[in-house]
Amino acid sequence: MTVDKCVNLAGAIAGVVGTILMYRGTFGLQAVSTWTSQAMADETARSNRQRLRLQRGGLILLTASFALQIVALFT
Image 1: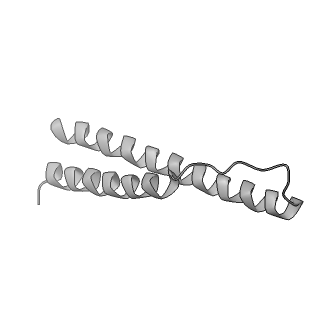
Image 2: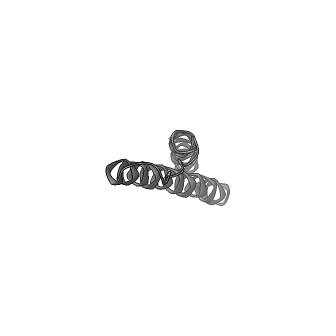
């Protein structure tokens, strides 16, 4: 396998994993209601932080995927 094919494969894998992470993190953030207990508010905030991490990680992987594809063009 040549270098450009390896770089393209790595870019494709990064794109697929990034897309899956973004899908898992894009069900929308939950609003913290004023009528909930502090434990429920903390759980909602924790869930929202996890979703934001998934979204950011997915976006980073998608960006890396495009960067790897650009690199593969010039190798």
